[in-house]
Each structure stands twice: as C-alpha cells, then as structure tokens.
Length: 184
Image 1: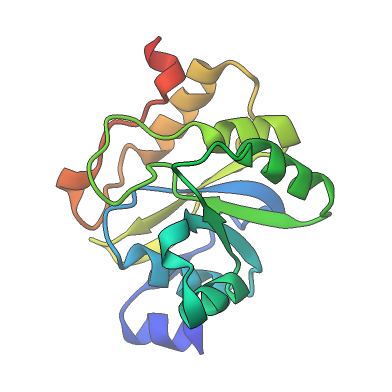
Image 2: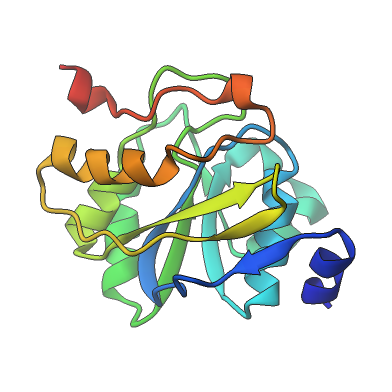
C-alpha cells in the first residue's frame, strides 16, 4: 500500500544503491514535519524494518505506543544517558539493524550536525548509509554505504560530497554539514 501512496503522490524510489541490512542511516537534511511520514512510507514500501531516533516529547500516550511500534527510540536530549553506548550495544545484539538518525537533531537551522551517528557507526563497526528525500524531483533513496575510518574529516568529506546536490523541503533551514569535533 505504501508504494501505491508514493506513486499516487508522484514520488519515485531510487534503488540505484539498495539499503545495507546493518547500518546507521543518515536522515538529512531534516527541514520539515513531512520528513517523518515520508521515511515511514519509503521504509514500508521497501519492506524495511527500521529503528529511528526521535525526541522524547513525541512519545506520549497512545501516540508514543504507535511510534515505538513503528521503530521509534525516544532520545532524552536534556539528560546524559550514554545513548551512543546503548546503540552500539543494540548493534552487537542484532544481526540486522537499520538505525535512522536525524543528524541535525532539529527541523530548524543548526550550525552543525550532531556527531552521535558517527560515534555509533564507528563504535559498532557498521557503515553509515546516507539517505535522501529530493522534494524538487520527488525521489527518495540511498547513497553507497560508507565504512568510517576514524578520520572524521575524511569521512565527513565523503558524506558532504553525497549531500551536495540535495537540500531539504525548506532549503533555508539546511545548515552546514559539519560535526562539532571538526570545528575544534
């Protein structure tokens, strides 16, 4: 049914690079509330069982139950909870795991990405997989898996190159693709 909804809305799945079964998926740029339903539609259309991270405030009551059933993992942004270590553990306990991380951490403009996705993927020794929603051309898909080397600048240069042609639904809300550690 998800494929039919996407087709009806004029969206196409770009499967030039099929998804990797064990990876951290980069959800960027994240500039609209539409990004979430599009992620759910695309993953459902492809039969992917994803886990995704979202701010804790959306996981309340019956809605929270549904979001968790859809793969949601609440992130308590104002608490130190060792989330990176928890996600590395989750990878070690699963043969297949596709963890979607909204790397900007917000739909609004931000001066850098959050680096948790990098530390999770590197610590779990799994590739990062850039994803895209091209609102202008109504396409969504995946880049090639990137195995991180530990050289953050080199690794991020590859990620920046992938995202160079893409902007979010609201391009003015897309910030620079850089991690705080790169600015030090």
